[in-house]
Image (tube, rainbow, N blue to C red; front, side, top):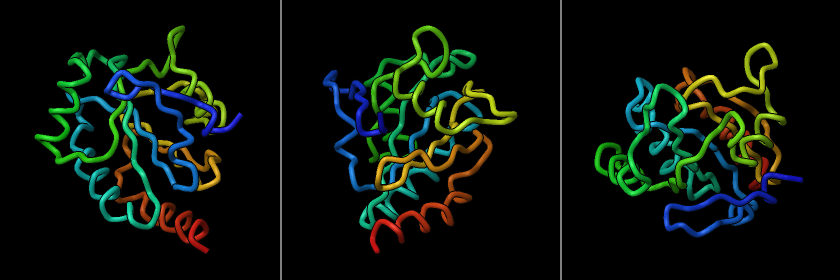
Length: 163
């Protein structure tokens, strides 16, 4: 299976296939609106706007598994992201990224790119996965990795995609 074989519920309650991102470089991020890393929304939106015409798409997956930092409804999460950070990239419905109810997409992502000490487990909000234009998981980044520090990797993948 590949990234494109998975589906997730969009905030409209419709399931959307990740194949809608086929041919694009995708940055997948588990987000939270009440986290110390929440200001990363600003940098993620900056990346999305800067590179979307070149083929990048940032997608967010709210998660409430870490210290109850995203207890809002899906619509309120989206409103928060738009109002406070100007987010225009797709924000999907809230999911679990670990445990018995973890979303199948995250099970796949974690199996393809492990974290510190080869751990599959997502440690906190704003863990990031970079997917190339062919649907391959290329890199996993820690929550502490600021969006601006992904520019070199994103530009490299976009250059390959647009060659």
